[in-house]
View: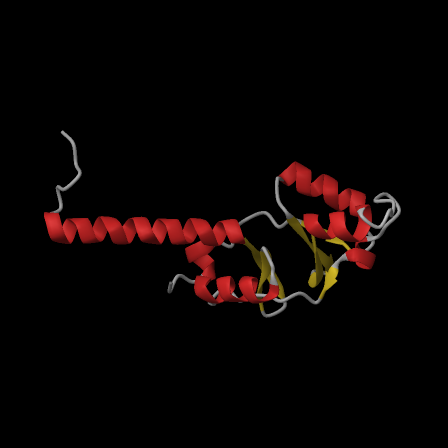
Length: 150
């Protein structure tokens, strides 16, 4: 799986889903619901300081009986999370996710935040790669018109 994170898995042009350190867990949950994502990056002066996931909110806020409105993301986020670079491979992302039990990894170019990769992004990249390989193999074995209907 030689696909690079950018542009092979994400395009690097996605709207960043982020909040400042002072934001609340409630604001994070609302942003995740609005954007239909499972994690937000926590930034300070444009630099990644942490990541907060839907699981963090459940385990570190709700399960402990804390008020989401009164709990700062800085108190419940994962600080200094594992990251990827844009030239890293999808396989490396998958290995890091499996080893750490993550479903989301921020993508950084130096200190610049480029995006976030989710396990769903990796699954989709693998699906596309397998589809392309299958089509290429079928064309090689059966000819380029195999499977084409008139």
